Image (spheres, rainbow, N blue to C red):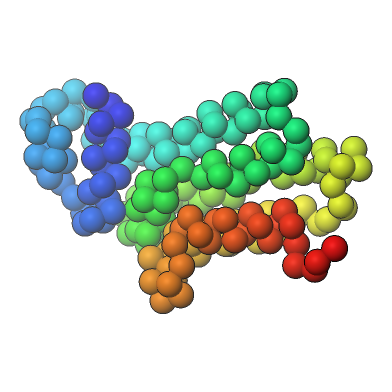
Length: 185
């Protein structure tokens, strides 16, 4: 039931922002407010656990990739780029970061902290590949900066609409540029 609550909360955040009510959520799920409050003590806790749910999915998938000894380094790196969760889930939260900062500053910080570490596992893998001389030496601090800012832009509805790019196509382009570069070899 909790997963359904998280997914419906993300849907509401995506459509009406953080101003949704627990009554809105109860209607969306087809249950009562009392049922929702049997899982969560407050709306703030509901939002926090929903944020944790989204970023936990990323961590679990990252660990599965890292621990898969049947994959080559290049395959693992490609899978990391494909591992960003559904754009709607993460995007619905990021689109409302201003409201999150205004009404729930602790949760805003939590999302920012998670976004700033979302690429840590693939960066560590890339650094190991550089050390093992399987990859070209690059500045991984700059790579992480590029990835962090790029993902934030791809999850920004106004940017995506203005530039007529989808999250998936943007992420694929970033992946291709990083994995294969610009210059023909």
